[in-house]
Length: 206
Image (cartoon, rainbow, N blue to C red):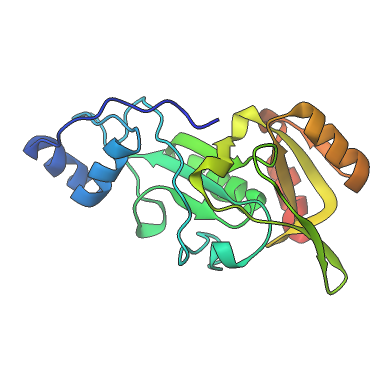
């Protein structure tokens, strides 16, 4: 579930100046502290883990540009240390899990350091499976409480249930829930460390 909150603190002039140098505004710095990210002179996000945030009604996916809450399926948030994703404050936001992995692989190739990777936890929400124009979808859940660490879920990969960008990785913090979902809707099961670039590339083609 969401990571522990860091200690609340004041933003010093020195910290503010150094974080602005790294591209984080004072508003973003205050939000990071309020959200659980410790601040130090060495970096705007320290080794503390920032908590997930609620996806706002106008938040767009950092890969495809679609407005996230307007589309079905799992979503994701990724926080980075000392880098602003796609020119805005952390986190990077996505309307599909596979896009989040694609984006993260590319940023890690650039030497970026990830502070947290959150995905929708379908074990923690009352989700809906529905059909639209012959395609089966799973509901989206934009609230912060619906996210958990990607390392703490079992993904069902490429099931017959789709999200905003087609077949996806649908996460469950309960392994039993993931097994039951895969038994009903197909797909393979994978842990965070099992997700590869080739797996993401295959999902991007579907």
